[in-house]
Length: 279
Ligand code: C5P
Image (cartoon, rainbow, N blue to C red; front, side, top):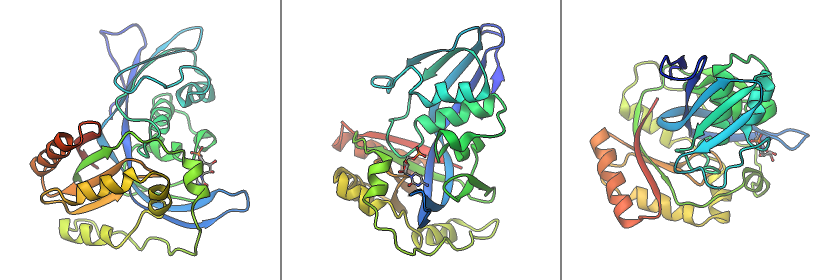
């Protein structure tokens, strides 16, 4: 995800890409005294995401465009704004929203992470949200602690996927509140470097998203999305990402993913169905 200056843009403009974050697994392994949950999650990033342009100036300003702009605040409530303040940066930010917000694939955290990465911020990402540090890292990683500990996972293979969001927003705190925390086992070690598709899919299938049960209870549409994905041709694995409501299916090839996305979009024109690569 190249962050670079572009000679065709106003002086000093940095453009950056905020890819969708996908939790291939999400194990809730405990709870801290302050209520935050301990996580062990394998996170990868999609080729689809939001786009940002940062032009230095004397005042902080946020302009939001793109298909998912409606309803996104363009003031200090937006994590992008908070990320700029954390970086001590001032200027005009243009944010193009291509990702559904409140969807378990980063949304505001992806945008904030991209801004922190572009501005070279070293510390404090977790103060903006538990998903922000991994989004700032921006590459495959195992996320531990409450999200504040990031272990690079460069050996994760690339997957062809379809992301599906039914247009239902669920608030992350509500999902965590509805979760019955058990002593869930942490994730076992990842497959060895160079392991093939079959080993990876079998390994992933043996893991979980521990938020899925609570999220499905709050938003039954998630169950409909998972069932529809499970019925697509060639699908290898179906799971929810983050606290939902976006779910993903994994496929053996990009053309299988494209065929599945097309079939789902035809049957469910109101769903966001996007074929992509995860890595
Ligand atoms: O950190 P963030 O603002 O994204 O988290 C939203 C809410 O989700 C928290 O207030 C908390 O209720 C819950 N949460 C949690 N454990 C985590 C991350 C989030 O309980 N590791």
